[in-house]
Length: 268
Image (cartoon, rainbow, N blue to C red; front, side, top):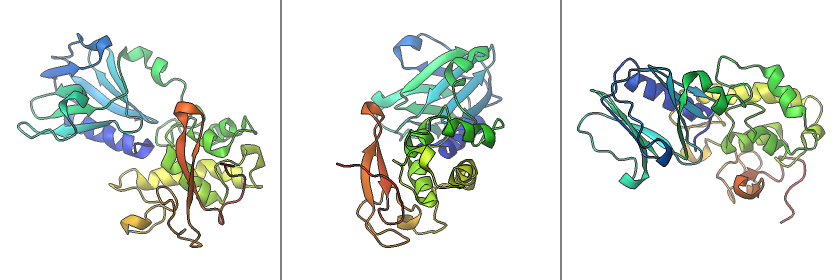
């Protein structure tokens, strides 16, 4: 599941494959930009901002994409078979003489003027893996609505950018509180740990092929709670529980240990 660390990795792969080279093919398969032709433009830079990707091109254009739940960018060499999914799932193709970058299942794909990138990412809070990281601002953002459940506050990219559903569940476990605990009810000193813990987790995984929060190498023990519903907690052996958190289309599966984590839990 794409989060700040995996999106940063995607940006690095795209930058290595595209930056400094002229596009020999471009194909944006979304109605609004289907006629846009970027062929002949040099790719200047590919960077991440939270969970957003910004591909900047000469002439003052930026291709903005977001992976959300299951989008991806794949890099292929000339003649290599494309294996990222069926053809109808391709939303973008950017190719040069040595590589083809193919975007699959991209729910957000738009072409912007580079000087108007703020319309796509200006609402984001401090980026955990970016040069604008500011733990004091992130903490202030998280605490501005004391009644809001911690899990929802962590997922709100306006507070701090880069945390997704995996890190939300893992952070709450490490803080020993449930994701439904109101931010204002956090135990003394716990709130101050939020930005530092988030930064530590994403920094530790920014270059890893597999996300790890436990320090354990076994695939089934890399995460404390996420994706482990019904399996024993790695700390106390109590079965991990799961329930959705959020409203409507924003609901996300959430995992917690009913023994290790204190605070409210869903009633259904």
